[in-house]
Amino acid sequence: MDIRYASHPDEVKSFDTSRLRQEFLMESLFVPNELTLTYTHVDRFIVGGVLPMGQAVLLEADKKEMGADFFLERREIGIINIGGSGTVSVDGTIYSMDSKDGLYIGLGAREVAFTSDNPNEPAKFYLNSAPAHRTYLTVKIAISEASPNHLGSISNSNERTIYRYIHTGGVQSCQLVMGMTLLKPGNMWNTMPCHTHNRRSEIYFYFDMPSDGVVFHYMGEPQETRHLVVRNEQAIISPSWSIHSGVGTSSYTFIWGMAGENQTFEDMDAVAMKDLR
Ligand SMILES: O=C(O)C(=O)C[C@H](O)C(=O)CO
Ligand SMILES: [Zn+2]
Image (cartoon, rainbow, N blue to C red; front, side, top):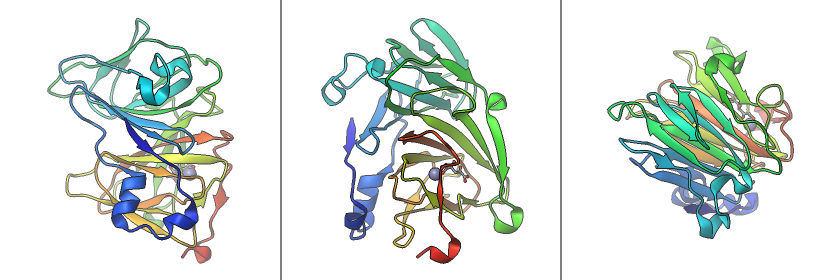
């Protein structure tokens, strides 16, 4: 399990490109038949990916790093499939997962296994997990059941739909809030004007990009912005003090996940365009 520590914003000002990437970027989430996990001390998120290719992959705890006998002993998890169809089995109950289907699994589930229906068109399960204090129902969420919110305009190159999967008005959780943003064709910008939210941190995961496409993802304090070049199926840690916004060389989709002090999606500290540096 890859471990990342939290950084002070004053320290991050002096990071060069490779240090920024080492601390904040997750470059390889999908390795055939492996559970790939990164544990960040930023709100103790675990971010991961599963690519089952002809065998089931188990959601196993890293006993040393997590100090737990099973992954969901003290945690909850949100899962979104970005690949072909597959299944997630939770203590013997099988959930069929088509592309862009989501699943919330509550504290205490012991045996979670991932499979693909067709190894030639494998499922790709993207995972966000956060510490939990009580059990909420395990629920599957089709994108048609997620709450859509249309934002932006073609004149600002940011017309997009935000789908909330796990949130206060939908599937309940202890602290995880999770969803997906789809850009309309021809639109390249996400989350600009940008914001921070000191009560929560956030993980962005970019996908549906061509192999030579990149997203210039902006992070840092609003007056000390930095960029990271992010490629298809890579994820970024955004601490509570950091903006999180990106512009692509072509269109893309991204999954966002938040955890922390509150779950109020609208609780954002908006950054005025004139204040960005
Ligand atoms: O497109 C957007 O704007 C977003 O998806 C914003 C994220 O959901 C976010 O940053 C929530 O805090
Ligand atoms: Zn945000």
